[in-house]
Image (cartoon, rainbow, N blue to C red; front, top):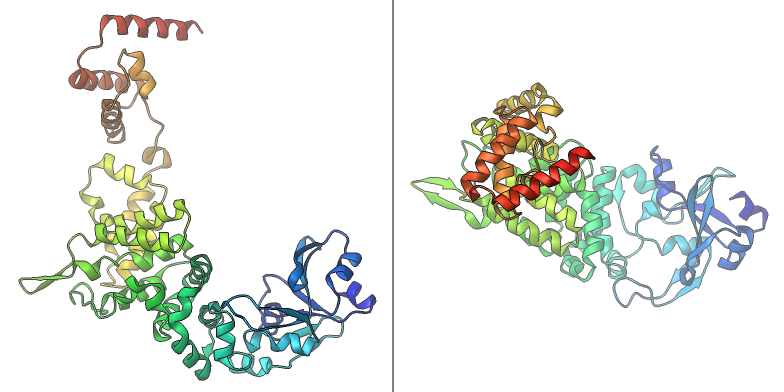
Length: 448
């Protein structure tokens, strides 16, 4: 800032960092708006990198972080609902006027300690309001993603959306589908991992944004549940409460919670006067995969979200599982997320945490080595016994693993003997030629 000012240019902090500073929040990053052109910024900062030359944006390394420095600009009409048709140099006041919301249109001079507010942002900060700069219809038509940003800012800051701004969102909500799935996903993730994520989901619904983005979730509204287990209300209400009960969720956990009961909408039945949802976890897993693929989650994230939806009902089966199977479940990579989803699910329904507490005590009772000890035999051992690799190897190794986890075998020798017996029962004895080859291989290994 000083270097730009000393070179004769106007320069201010702009946007979200000013908003956060005035709210007493730590800014995640700092953006600078200036009268300097790209080439003039590059002259002052030779290591800077132009990242949006058409928009006059340069990224400058400073104090161990990167700062975006953008020339004051005004923009032509947005013909595609995302990009301006042209960009022209402008004054600081005009640059503020082209931004999305009043609370993001504030400029600050840290050298003089002066806030510049040409859009009414300070008053809206004090009133805790999200309001567009100028006509909300025009602002949202420029970039339809701004409708989701309004929701995200409201839940992140615990602000209300100004009525005229809210009405414009409701009218234009169907057009949100014109935005790329990746950009929609990014905003949804921020909404559903914010402290007010339950309110965020309700706000998406109130503003008519939920149905075009997530019709599967919107369909949960009005789907009744048995009052004995779910006194809180319908499936949508339950989902809101589950989201609110989560503790610091990751994007995967928040979407697992969002979709954990999505299968109930299509499996709802009434048998002998009782509401049931047969196989809603299986159906829900299939729907969750469709939703997360549509939103362009990564393959790993899709796999983990689908697993949470598919297996969230299995937690209550843990006391009835064989010890070996239970230990396998505890050893899952996603077990901590499954357990947290189960805790939130209980809180949002009956409120009974007795099973959750039993599970946590059982996990605490076992050491990491007991839950997931190193395997005692492998496929190489079966080959060394003289067996040819094939589909039966998996069954042999899994049966030995079960015996290990249940304490039936404790040493490598015991495990190898059990594997030999199982292999003979499934495959018969190895041929003499195989035994000779295996023995020869073992002798060579022993000699080595």
